Amino acid sequence: MIPVKKGEDNFLHKKQKHSGFPSPAGDYVENPINMNELLIQRSSSTFLMRFKGNDMLLSGIKHNAILVIDRSLKAKNGDIIVACVEGEFLCREIMITEKKLLVTNCHKNRSIDIEQVLDFEILGVVTSSINMY
Image: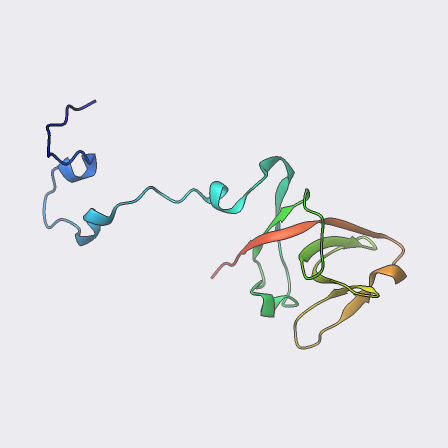
């Protein structure tokens, strides 16, 4: 550890020698962003999946987005979930009223009545999505 004199700035990045003009942002250096800490609450029950299609575009989930899905969360009304419906993976919003529906929010706005589906399983709740540009 470098000894620090009273009144001296102890930030090591400021003590580095520069050749040329120093960056104006040098005084605003922060800790780097840790994506795991930012996006994943429970690593043992979280997985990632790539989304294909435009059915969830109005929720901010674009084609080729990476979904962060938490299996430990119980799906509640209005959550965006990933489900297996008759062997096909779907990302939809779940609406729980007198009926349980999976709905899209695109212009076609197709819905699936969960109670009419024989093979249905909720894989997890989408907690975040990462869109690629």
